[in-house]
Image 1 (cartoon, rainbow, N blue to C red):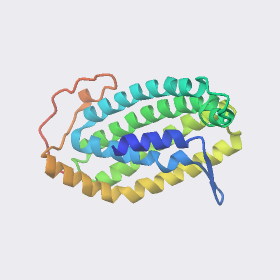
Image 2: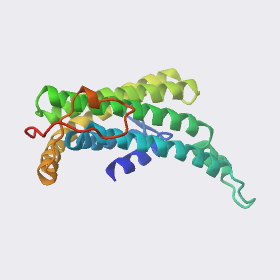
Image 3: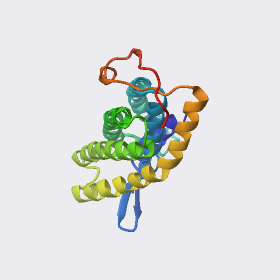
Length: 224
């Protein structure tokens, strides 16, 4: 539920600019980081393969959501409704550009994020989840932000200097989120491993992006 809510809030908030001092954000950036927290926890406890299924399911949902929004925007409204122009400005032409960019960028970035969490877990024998979560989230965030802002700039939504300012502002904001939630995430991961009796370690053969079936995994090792 946390993952779904954060994706919906992030995708719909991307059109609203926010200015705080010298920092320039889109409103969706306050909510997208929760998706990375959820994916990190799912990958840590249940494994990369379960996270991969969730990410592909999310992509299917995005591919349904965008044409559905196009229909909602363009379906004929009664003459007594005078807000079509405002509705179109928020959810119309540029929403599709940003929706596609945010969706593709997020899926690509979170695949990398989840894989890093799982591979680093094997490398350090399950320790330092808080550090692995921070590092992988910042890398994934940087990729997602770069893709989304590049499309926004090419679509003429933001001038290049605003896009560049937003890149560093949003990345800083999300890095703060990653740092703040790292230790609580560690505690939640430990609790889930103990409550569920599961702690998945995966090898290189399990890290394909396109294999939807969950293959067998090695026995659980010591929890982080």
